[in-house]
Length: 445
Image 1 (cartoon, rainbow, N blue to C red):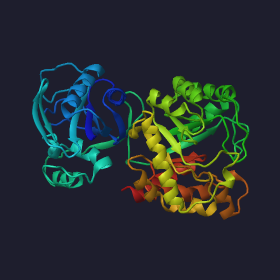
Image 2 (image 1 turned 180 degrees about the vertical axis):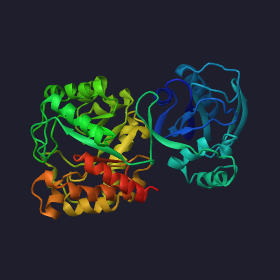
Image 3 (image 1 turned 180 degrees about the horizontal axis):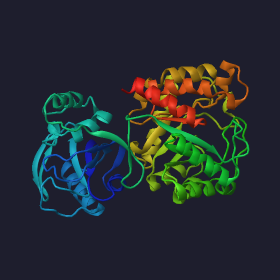
Image 4 (image 1 turned 45 degrees about the vertical axis):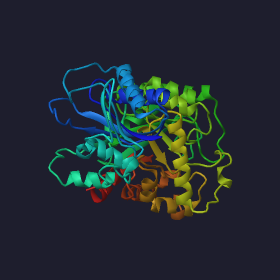
């Protein structure tokens, strides 16, 4: 049976508690099929308490409604919830059955009454808004209204004072608001063979460049120790680690900026996170290393999964698509499902359509023209666009040198913002930070 479940926390490491809840649900209750985004929400009923992190998820289970309730109560205790004596008061973890298929249940159990559907769904924005991410058209079996309609009904009342805000978790008690602005990810290539000829093998120079990017407006710095340009020679994990770890440690010693590790290897991802990185950026979406997805799940960090075909050595021969937008969206959906199956919550996944990876000039332009469609097809996952200095821009503009393609890159960044991308990955941070600010002012206001 497919069940819709609400989870929430407003004490301690809220994101950590929700991750532990997902792990426990997979271990004890069934299989988590997908999750909503994370949302920060103000407390209802008892308002003098910290803000919550809330989400909903879809669970496949063989447990009966009563057994599922008992399981949820055990999970709450496992994660650290203790009786407070205050109804609707602060709590380490809440796990509630919202819907059990379209079944209606009203009964008494050893831990109290059980009502399915949950009695208060229609007045809880912190439940309805996340439900729009994964079950907007699901119809309430008692009220005969879809979740979309129920949320619209609630918005028309005065009950919502502060709407739920979608966020990306970046570690204990650090969140970024989605849709508030477009984030700029600055590229640091700790390699000798970057396609853009900007490789920085000296760790101190790479650290200085990263800090300069932060001063210029970078919200994230992306550190890579292996080139992914067409035909690039693979690098052993030891060599990749030797390139990236000193850079990550050097940046972290001087700045709290989020750091992304650009790697396809689980061992590199783990070591980088332990050294101070914040998220993992994997061009292979877990295809190159069978340990990557489970490793990211265990690390409980955001994960950028990119669309590509083949490897950097073979991808230039794999550019045939029936419909590039449909094909890329379908492949990304499958990659997200594979990541969730390995324990990565949907709320931690960012998708990248892989501009320039197994795509020619015209295909890249079609994807950039359809960022909004890709975003809708991959919702609720945020979208990253990385077109910076790519060869197809040089072809269009007659610029052979990658470093001369900043103006061309600016056009792709503006297109990405117009399409609703959450992140643009760029080399020229000073210029692109201004492009993004103006594009945000046009498209996000």
